[in-house]
Image (cartoon, rainbow, N blue to C red; front, side, top):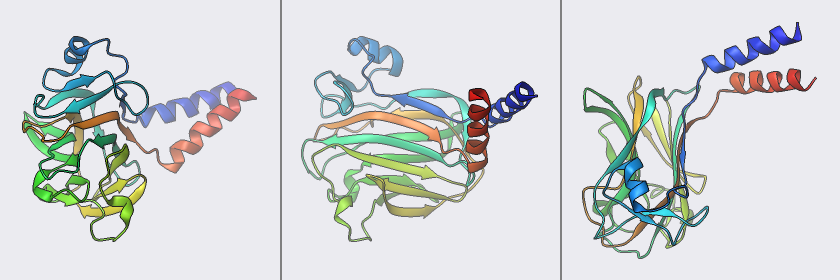
Length: 231
């Protein structure tokens, strides 16, 4: 009976498959290995990283948007929000800083929806920037809050875009800064790094992740399955 119940829990949880993508860029032996996985256009920095010794950098000498397919179409809903997360650093606070990570969904090569995190020079140098929502507008994350946590610095910071049915929540270091409205019903299948523009400063990206936040019911089922297994 316990085995049957445990199997049922596993099957139910498996039916609610979650997005899971992560790259800390530490597994690549050299630039050639990185290019083989992502494509040419960005630099594998083997001397600087957040979690370990390597990261991806974009500057005047490395420009181009590189990407990977996530391998499936992942939904973003209120029950299971989809998270785009990355650690970023920049060497100077200059106005011409333009580089970002981009999560998007497409149909027949046409972009349906997107969420982006990083730096957009058109928005100035005070804040970190996010893009998405209705009209795919660029946003100064946290600009209207008056909270200093959102001010750009020359150190590693965590940026997040949490995508739901009808809104995107932009965070800096786990602090909510900006909420924008979006259209529901889109899925996401591709992750990109960089831009076709050059950046005056060096921008580093590390610990890039895309994942769903499981709904409470799924977490409860998983916990029950683990409890049954331990017994």
